[in-house]
Length: 178
Image (cartoon, rainbow, N blue to C red; front, top):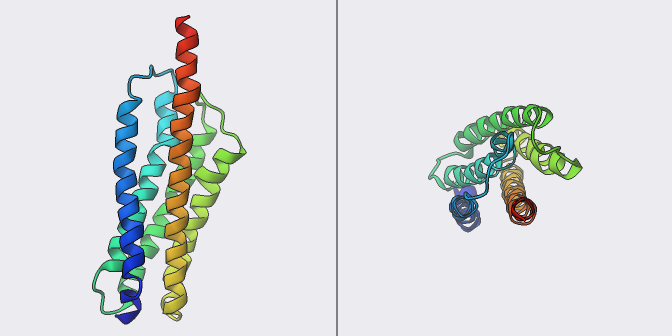
């Protein structure tokens, strides 16, 4: 369909960025792997690190869906709608994990970037799937906005994780050694 052809460059850029950032996450985690884990750190990683990789993966998946040679956008919209609903369910699970006891107590920024904004992005995807049935042009902008939002949320969260480990955890280890 011609409507998707017009988005090809956008999804090549966004999908490539997401794929590269997934790889970079693995490199960074390998580099900070020598930091001694405290009780609850593994659980916090599942709340603060894994979702970034999931968001990047979703952006990569959306880019693949919207780069596929569909005859009609509706076929792809069903898939991105399922991803949107699944993402909302995943964010509910993340919210529950954030409320549980961890070594770190989440602040407002954590709730915003790890629950509220991603939930909104996934909900937008789900709504965009329904919109595609009657307003294809607008729906494609909705999906693009959700993909960019997830990409930027992932970048923010990955950066926060690295900053925490480099400046807080390493400092804690240095103080403990002295």
